[in-house]
Image 1 (cartoon, rainbow, N blue to C red):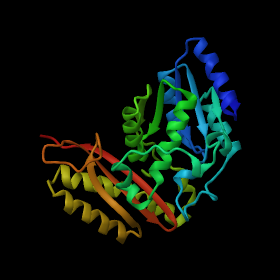
Image 2 (image 1 turned 180 degrees about the vertical axis):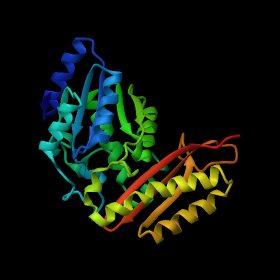
Image 3 (image 1 turned 120 degrees about the vertical axis):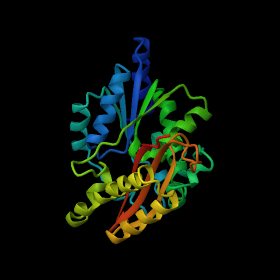
Image 4 (image 1 turned 60 degrees about the horizontal axis):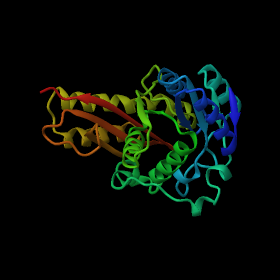
Length: 284
């Protein structure tokens, strides 16, 4: 695995691959890698002979009082994960390479409306930071394919919209969430959970499954199943930001004829904010 830290070195390496006629798949990460990330890199390998991964903890997507300074940085562990996944190039830039004019002078890229909904309503500016850094990385890596996890469902959809709106020649692929044996979605922030909280955390996914079954199989109204899920999560010790059922394709509220839905949740457990989702289909 080749590790590069500067834009110039990255572009030199990408140019060599292009001269050889090779397609490039890209997986952007913030490090503290787990098996979910490895799964993304394995999927990337299915789509291109060259896999580039990045590790960059992006300050623009952290709001005031959020965990930028304490976000886990685990370079030795990450190297082992990247090697096991067969990554060809790791781009690990300092902030000066990503934002050479500084964060406050950076040109922003933002998807309107959806960026301020769901998680965006509780984390102002978060998704503007995400789409800004992803656009920047796309322009530096110039991948043919980019792979994202569906655990961050809203992020995946926003990147798809941004890529289409800007006419970027990148195919965006979503990969199903990788879970622990008890159903908890793998996440770097799971490390923040205390042992007691960790035992409770899997109930988040259970709540989504119950919501799905109540609406899909029992015909309960969406507003009712959402409200019930919130009350039950509170009873389990969570502090929900939201529970919402949306259309899969654009995360808009579903109409009576919509069949492909996704239930999304964001909830605090202690000091840790967890997100999850479950896709399902309504039979006609």
